[in-house]
Amino acid sequence: MAWPRGAATLAAAIALAGAACGGGDAAESPRPGTAALFAYDRSAPLGLRDRGIINRADYPIKVRDVSFVSPRGGRVPAYLIVPPGEGP
Image (cartoon, rainbow, N blue to C red):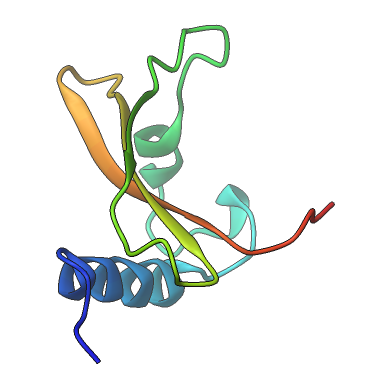
C-alpha cells in the first residue's frame, strides 16, 4: 500500500494533537499565565482556505489540506480529517 503524499506529516500532526489533549481548564494550568497564549477574538474572521482533498479517492476518509489566518499574523496550515458517512 502506498501512502498518500503528506501522510507522514498528517500522522505526526495527529500524534501531536493527541499528546496535547490534556483536558482541564485554564485555571488548572500548570504554568500560570499560559491561558493568555490561547486567547483569541471570536468575532474575527477565520479566513479558511481549502486546497482540496489530498489523499486517494478510494480511501474511506477524506484528508483536506486547509489553512486559516493566525491572530499573530500569517497563516496556520492544517489537515481536516473527514470521516465517512453523514455524522452528527
